[in-house]
Image 1 (cartoon, rainbow, N blue to C red):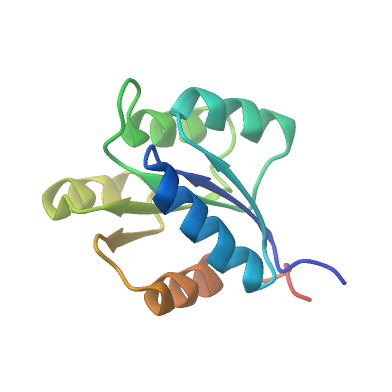
Image 2 (cartoon, helix red, strand yellow):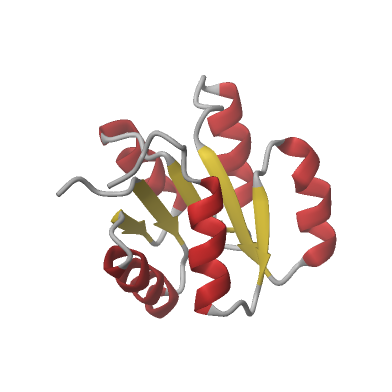
Length: 125
């Protein structure tokens, strides 16, 4: 069976990254996770996802840095859903190519619905 789409979860909180990965895998998506922006870059170079679920505030390089890099490296067609509790910054970043922002804390049904709406249409079972 074909997966519904490839997703990369980028969050420095390992328990959150694992939970999101498990939930979306159960929904039929192919999901990989990264705890750092640097590792996320390597995973994107290895196999470009259709969607990136991205935590904004991370140690070292931030999610904002990755967004800027993706948009300038010819990868603007990758959908990005920002995950953050920082509503003000999320609003500012929505002008920078973010497809959607999930404000933390969010429930899992909201996550599933949001992913389904933002995964490219050609990725179906």
